[in-house]
Image (cartoon, rainbow over all chains, first blue to last red):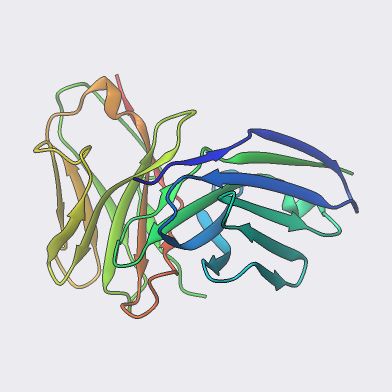
Length: 111
Length: 114
């Protein structure tokens, strides 16, 4: 079954890059996602990557997928105070409706 | 930009009481979901709903839970007899049929069972 693990807390200075990591256990995962949750808000889909890709770049966001190690990372370039949030990685299988989430990483951006 | 809305934002109830959590999915979406997050734990899938029936449910979604789409806009989660361990943030999500990778989430309802 799906099991997604994340470390919990990251502090980063404004303007620096931040990297959030995630490991997953289900090798048949098809889509892997990064969601952002700001205080009092819902889960906002930031980006996703299909499992046959190694990398996806979307403006300041770079997603790297290492299928061999089942490792997913999100790099945020030029981190800004508005990036302070909890970031969740998630996975889903083909034909499976459900998302399986990690516990989330809290990112705090220091001005 | 259209968004999923949920009401109430916070619900406090006594153990054993019934609660109904409400969601209004995005208007052209046809798949609907409930997830929950117990404080400090992972976001967990509860149930998915399509074409007026449950398409998938997790082991958490037992007989105490039910979902309904009572009209063309609302999607509800009912907990018949709440337990202390039902205290959590409950998220509703929705998507269009051909974009399985884009579930849009509401802001959540914080349920506190005392």
